[in-house]
Image 1 (cartoon, rainbow, N blue to C red):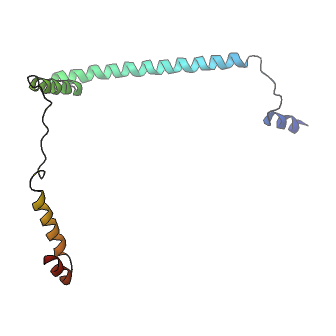
Image 2 (tube, rainbow, N blue to C red; image 1 turned 90 degrees about the vertical axis):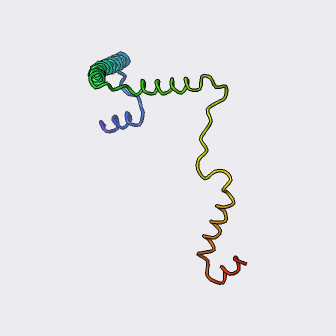
Image 3 (cartoon, rainbow, N blue to C red; image 1 turned 180 degrees about the horizontal axis):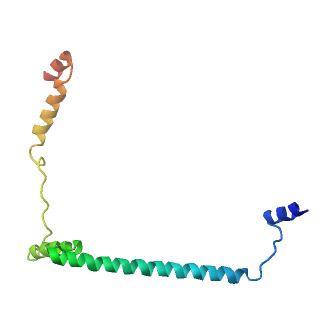
Length: 125
């Protein structure tokens, strides 16, 4: 008899409703939120302490933060481009430009070098 009662519960039958279930669930959720806030506060405090230590080291050795370096580099670029009305020119990589035909010939010669003798003769004519 007890097995069938439990089977009914497992299959989604009428379960005994806990009258305080909603209240308990809400309390559990609130406890989880509270723990999460405490954990975040703890880690924020630890990170603040670390940042104070890092800043002390930076001051001692004259090191700048990444953000500061990037800001200075950006300011330098803007200062260089201030009088210019056009965007900065991009460098032309080596190998681009007029030497294209010469390069194609050298590639063809390289391919011909690796062909068998009779085929080499055909291409050289």
